[in-house]
Picture 1: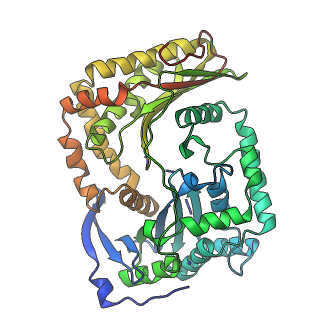
Picture 2: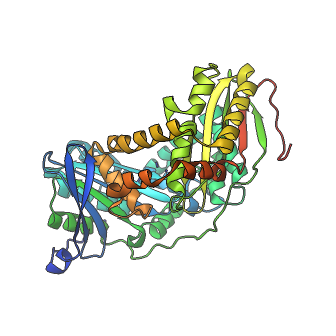
Amino acid sequence: MRHISSIDRIARWGISALAAVALLWLAPNSAGATKIERLITPAGIEVWLVRDPTVPLVAINFGFGGGSTQDPSDKGGTANMMVDLLDEGAGDIEGKAFHELLERKAIEMSFNAGRDTIRGTLRTLKENQDEAFELLRLAITVPRFEPAAVERIRSQIVARLQRGTTNPNEISSRTWWSTAYPDHPYGRPGNGTLESVARITVDDMKSNLKHVFARDTLKIGVVGDIDLATTSRLIDRAFGSLPAKAELQQFPEVTPQGIGRRIVVDLDVPQAVVTWGGPGIKRSDPDFMAAYIVNHILGGGSFSSRLYREVREKRGLAYGVSTGVSWFYHTAVIMGGTATRSDATRDTLEVIENEIKAMIKDGPTEDEFNKAKTFLKGSFALGLDTSTKIANQLVNMQQDNLGIDYIDRRSALIDAVTLADTKRVAKRLLDGGQLVTVVGRPQGVASKAAGN
């Protein structure tokens, strides 16, 4: 889950590169199949391409291994700050001129740092594709990190962090992650702290760029009115000069700590914000699809989930409640959240706990199971209705090692899950217990240690 961010060599397209193309099929919508083409550029970069000549646009999504896990332990937020500065001037183009070029050519460029990856997007008119990819090359290879821009971005981040100190959602989330992963980078906030952001230097960001942006972890999806040869040329132009291999810190597999604890953080706000979570199931696990279905039935199905029905519809205890499964390079979790009146917090927690226990004991009903499978198969195409969304999905599939034919196989993978599978996996997914954080002034709810 799963995200949710962001070089001069022009190589010719040769016969050897053509031999590396593999043609498969992607069905992004019911209107018809669209071909995915897998190519290896002369610089050795793998690209998944979906050609769409109906609109004169080109969209690219790309991702590097890295993210906030690569921040120095005392300088959390380094990757986040770095990506915010990539389009603030690059090469010989100062920041204001860089933005003016993007605007004049109607080029959209953005970058985002997650826990394990740094993602980027580029969207451009076909007629401006050469200029767009050149600006991308500059941004990811020679960003300027101008002093004025650095301090402006630092001030913006600090302002957001200061607002977060009184935001119950931010406090609840940060408390959960720092408790669940106390000795791991996952426990640090990706955008840093007031103290750590103040310590980040230009050299820190340059070091992060040098060690993280490399071709061996690079995944790319391209969608639009573009052919194989042009794709190969532009990709090598933008990314071909990057180092061959990243220099990444390695971390062990971890599971959430603090299971069974409830942590109440006092904050004078009208509602109590509740976050809960426990060990999940990784994307590569054979039980993942069954866990995905179980989560949809419990709390992932928005208006159709058990928790929504029991917490909101039947009792009116909260406006919304949901759960989600998330997977990372070194851990997996299932998490949920809601916000409720202070005087209703205890009742809300009891309903949630009872529904989780019922799911562990009996699993989904046959009716819930069948409806969930139908929805999950039919709704997938809704996430593939634009070129940008398709490019994003192509990178997701590569980073999760799902295979280029995953979309063809996805419905069959869901169909292969049986009701018995979901009953078994419901126990595996939910019976590990929960760490709960509550922020506000909940009546009748107090902190408790594990086992109490």
